[in-house]
Image (tube, rainbow, N blue to C red; front, side):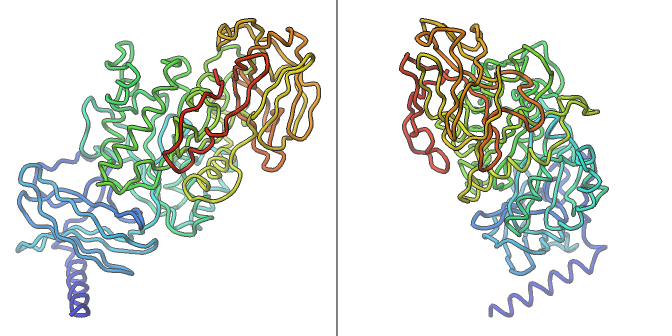
Length: 543
């Protein structure tokens, strides 16, 4: 009986494909307006030929529109075969199915068919199953493959990665939450030089590097817009958690609260994904800067809940979320905007994952400036090193590999008569600097903050794990806080003073309150927030 069923199913599929005059071709055109109102059988906008659906153990969902009350049969034909039935809602005109888990691979053809005299059907061809990653943010995520260093070499490699597929959401804003995308910039594509050139470099490289490790299909969904603040990508409920209930009247267009969440993220919620990566923050260096330690983590929390619920529980409630810590903008700038955003990107811990930002990973990039970028110094062209560092974090957080993905971070700070001694959590490679470290002198620790008077503390001595910085500028008993690399452009290309001696990853910027004259010790309980949601909040002594 099982064999007869499979044969019948294949015969039905062949009949559907061969009768092309009897089926509606599924093609997604840029700026196509999508609606369930016409009663035609369709897939939602982000399903298409050559796409990647999320592999097992998760289940991929499919949905679309059809005649109200009609029965839709979905066939999945390839290395394995599935048949699923769905009814079109009488109210919304929407049909939905949840596929059984599919092992990575393909190709598959997926057909949605109506039982009617016309044998109406729509088919997606050359569909793969693998891991799907969402890539979002502002202009450095939008930054195209064609603009990076050695772009021609990267584009020439495209055809060698046919199992890394990509899709780009069109630039749309909305004052209300949309059900589906109304504009697609790049439909699902098999890599080739022409289609890849305008796609996100960080997104593409992330997928390519993951494929080198995983050797199974990777699907990349880019949804980004240059110059936009985190508020535009956040739902109203997420912003309310940070006291931002109403839009700022001085902003308009894609910078308005929630307009990109509404049009470019909310429509994707039914799509099962593996995780997300994010490159944004520049626009918040002078807009709601002091709230970013709330708005960014709140956005991550909200996205996780929304994708989990929208996918019927298939997208993990704590799906891995990676981000790029800001690079550089202006040399010799004394503005605190970029260093403060870098700090707030970690919810003021200095490292991730942490208690507030669990299951996250970060690429430190302040040592990758591009002084001669023709696209402006705020848009560095070295996206290869950025993405390499980001992929290291994904290997650990998302794929449970055992390797080092973080640069050195202090575990102990102790002042004495001549020095402040900073001990790191790993062996360090050191280049001396007179001003990369700063100390705040105050008899009252509470007076030391981001706006306090900081003085340079030259590096005097160091060993494998500890750096001794001078306290000559203030009595050791009054050293209240220490900070590192606290400026917009702290060092030249790959030339910061402190790196890991084993991985060559840079130490991230930090600002640490010593709490008392005896110093500060990092409580390693905060380090255990990699893949679980347990643990108690502890006082690290961080400002």
